[in-house]
Length: 231
Image (cartoon, rainbow, N blue to C red; front, side):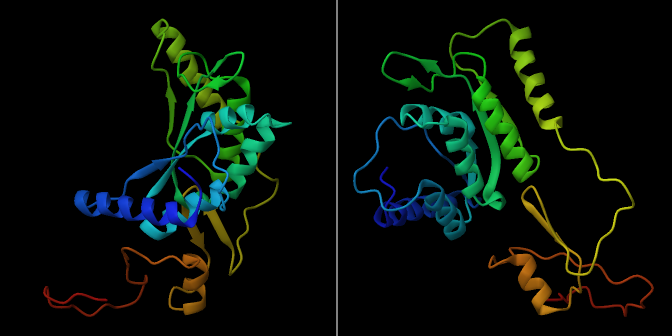
């Protein structure tokens, strides 16, 4: 698909049509591509950010595809090129991360899901979870299946990479009014829930799909009719 406004509008309409039919959001994956379009006008990460923001779909981030594309583009540093995509993607839209092995031929690197995950892919995965927090991962191996213990080894390697986090800072944990955290796909803010500016910072231009509220502690709550719904 060409990364143009016209293609984005078409894909967004099709994604929305599917989601309306299923009554649920779907995931869209960045693909391994073996050619590029001369009329591309949008960066790939910008394309997916806009698609997710417009339709409410989520991104299935395939870090193996990022490395394959960088290798086929003869990037000077394939890991850095793939990490740049990760940095440009809005972490709030990423719902899952895929890893896989690739095959190197004389002319192309092919996303064949037929071997162990290569070291550059693990590096990009580690960068992604460091930036985005924990995301559900999937190691894909579809062809030339090995012994089961080899598959388990790949799963354990994925866990080791996810556990490679920096140590906690010394001293007591401190939070201040206005502090904002991005925890994976979730945002948490320290502030007054009745303050519109605080809510605007938390939502960052997004629209809440559902709101759950609890009454404040130590505050008497008057009984309400079972038919009453608080907006």
